[in-house]
Length: 207
Image (cartoon, rainbow, N blue to C red; front, side):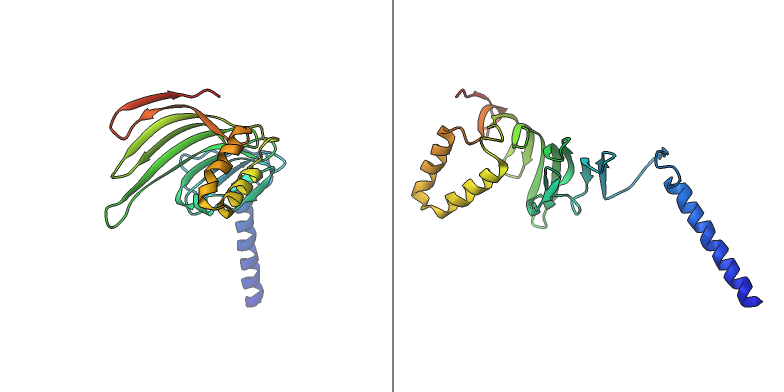
């Protein structure tokens, strides 16, 4: 009898715990709303009802790669940043806000922030940036002329870089210039920001 009482007590405690979890997570009602005064997390994925990611807010350790039509690509270079990524209806990245700021043991500062908006299935069309180090602080707005994705895809950009690295160093500039003349590359059209000599500059570049 003693063992039976112990078993029933344990079962009751487990059932109570499960009920509490259900009530707290809203598992009985998927549409239930919850309100919090404060929440502490490492990463938040905002998704559509079908599971399509639309926004990712993340710390540095869990920062995602890039997204193209619902598939996530490897981007180890992004692990130095925290921030958020904007993702469009088809699951393709179309901009984001990233930021970092640190100082090493030897006093070297590595700090920066970038807010970008991408062309559809392409790279940055608009960027607001700030980079900071002991030698230079750069703040500005950059507007780029970005080719249509069917003319130059992100995969093409990667391939161009691989092909350029295979060429002799004295042929690389001509290779990139040829691609630029063909309208295959992004070109900066407007730059507004400060300069290394503590001045300011507005650069306007037409085709």
